[in-house]
Length: 58
Image 1 (cartoon, rainbow, N blue to C red):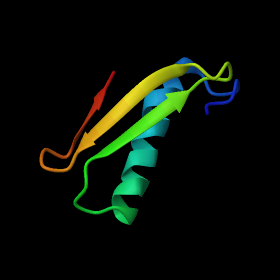
Image 2 (image 1 turned 180 degrees about the vertical axis):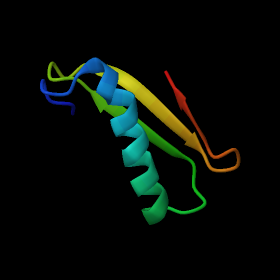
Image 3 (image 1 turned 90 degrees about the vertical axis):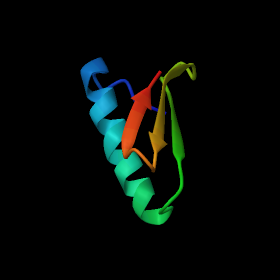
């Protein structure tokens, strides 16, 4: 969950950093990171594709 102190323009860089950290713990696996706002509503989904080394945000 993202706190109120995180600005909207800071969410993607934060999620990218999280995904990079997760890649170290789960090598050779696709990852999905779900981000929720303070109101507990889903605000962002980030999917990391290990083959392309890309993150897609929705």
